[in-house]
Image 1 (cartoon, rainbow, N blue to C red):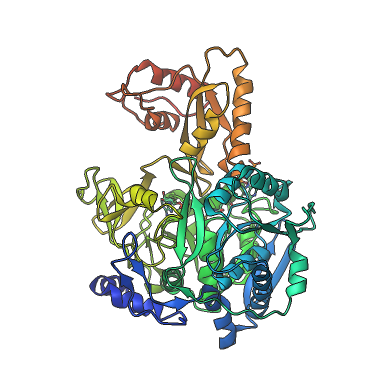
Image 2: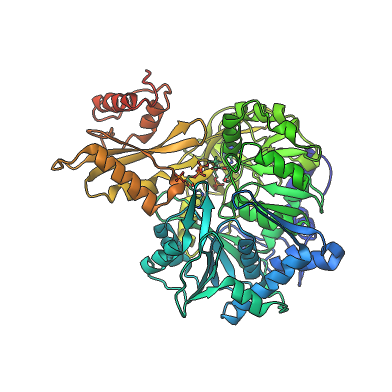
Length: 636
Ligand code: COA
Ligand code: AMP
C-alpha cells in the first residue's frame, strides 16, 4: 500500500484485512497466514493466528541469506566505557546461534521464560534474539530498577533462567548488578534454575557454583554451533515487558511474534522513512519498549544498522555526544525522548557542539515517551535544521498510535501535537460516560477495537486484569488512559494521563507503586505521591507524608529515610527525592485524597477549591509547605 498519508489511511479503513496481509507479506513465514484477523479468538481478536514464523530468522538469517551478511547490524557505541564495536549481520547471527545453543543445552525451549537484566551491551541484544530463535519468551528488566522490582517480575513471569551482567555503569558510579540479582532471587518465591552472567571488566562479581554460569565461557564452548530457528505461531508470545500499572504490581505486557513483525516492519519505512541499509538510532534503553521496538526488532527486521548507545545525552563526555554519534556512524534518523533534548539544551543552549560535527546525513529527529513541549521542539528544529517529529505511543501498542509519517510524506507540523492516527488506529475522544465529545474538547482518548497487529493481546497470566484495565470502561474501545483532544484538522493532542502514572525523564512510573513503598515506613501514617512539573525531566515525583501521632522523631530524618526506602524498593530510576511532612492530607468527604488539586498547587497552576472537600484549610496548609520548599505558587 503506497501513497500519501490520506490515501494509505483510507486504504486501511476500506480493507484492513488486505492492508495487514500486505504488511505481513514483507516478512518471511514458514507457513503463511491464511488471514490477518481472527475476530473470534483472544480478548479482541488475534492476528495471523495460523501463520508460522520466527522473529530471529526475520531479524538475522533472512538478511544474511539475502547478502546483507557484511553490513553492520549493530554498532555498540559506549562513551561511558570508551568502547566501540561494530557487529555485522553474519557475526550477530553466529553469536546468537552460539548463545541459543547454550540456552538450549541448559533446557530452554519454546514458551520458557528468560529474564534479561542487563545494561546496554551487545550481549543483551544477543540474549534477546537467542530467546526469539528458540521460541523462548524474554522479559527484559531495566537496570535502574531495584531488587524488589526484579523479584516481582521473577514471581510473575517465572523464568527458567536469568541472563545478567556483573555491572552497569552510570556517570560517576558503577552499579553492581549481581548483588541486586542475588537479592531478587532470594526475595522471590519462584527460583530460576540457573543464571548466566556476563563479567564486565569494570567490576567482576562472584559466582555461585552450580547456579551461575559465565557468559564468555558458554560462548566459547558453543562457538560455531548451528541451531535452527524454532517455528512459532503468529500469536505465540515473543516477549513480556513489564510496565507500571496503578498499583505496585506491574503489568506484564505480552507481545506476539507475527503481528509485531508486520507492524514494526511497516513503521520503519512508512513512519520513519528509512531504507534498508541505513543507520537508525533509538537513544533509549533496551529495558523500555522503545528499546525493544527500535533498538532491536524494528531496525533488524528491516535490514537497518542499529546503534546501541551506552551513555547519556550529557556528561558522557559532554552535550555534543549525540552529534558525534550521528556524524560518526552516519545516522539517518534519531529517536529519543524530549527529556534528552531538554538535558542537552540546559548544558549547551546555543548548540555550540553541533558545528563540530558533519550532520549532513541526518534526516529527522523523532520524539516520544512523554509530551514534547513546543519550546523544545522549536529549539531542536532550529538547531538541527531537520524535521522534528513528535509521535505518541505506549508500551502496550509497541509502535506509533499517532505520528507524522515521514515515509508517506510529512504533513504540516503542529507544535504540541503528535499529528494524526496511523493506519490500524481509529482514535476517538469520549467523555467519562463514553459519549463522543466535540472536536477541540478534552476527553478520554480511546482506540476502537480491534487493536492493530503489534499491540498487546493480553497481560501475562492476567487476562481479567487486561479486560478490566483496558477494555471494560469504554465497551468496544481500548482505553489509552491518556486525556487529549482532536482538533478541527484531525490532529491529536495528548495532554495528560487519566490515571496515576507519571512520566519521569521519559520513564513511566506509578505514583501508586511509590505510595506503597512510602507507606511501608513505620513512622508514616498516611501518604500521597504526585507528579510535579520539572523543567528537565518533565515530571518528578513528590511525596507528602503524615507522621504517626506518637512519633517524636525529627521529620527531616524520616523524610530522608523515606527517600532511601523508595530508592531501595523501586530503584534510582524513580528519581524520588522530594518528601514533605504535612499535618494532614486534603480529602473529599468520602475520604479520597485530592491528588490532582495538590499537583495543580505544586505546579503553580490555577486551581479551584473542590466542592467535595472535607476541610478547605488543608489545601492552604499544603500550599504553605510547598511554598516553604520553593515549589509552585499558590493561585486562586
Ligand atoms: N542502571 C542503574 N541506574 C540507572 C540506570 C540504569 N540502567 N538508568 C538510570 N539510572 C539511575 C541514574 O543514575 C539516576 O541515579 P541518581 O539518582 O543516583 O542520579 C537515576 O536512575 C535517575 O535516572 P534518569 O531519570 O535517567 O536521570 P539522569 O539524571 O541520570 O539522566 C537524562 C537524565 C534526561 C539525561 C536521561 O534520563 C535520559 O537520557 N533520558 C532520555 C532517553 C531515555 O532513556 N528515554 C526513555 C524512553 S524513550
Ligand atoms: P510508555 O508506555 O512508557 O511508552 O509510556 C506511555 C505514555 O507516555 C503514554 O500513555 C503517554 O502518557 C506518554 N506519551 C508517550 N509519548 C507521548 C507523546 N508523544 N506525547 C504525549 N504523551 C506521550
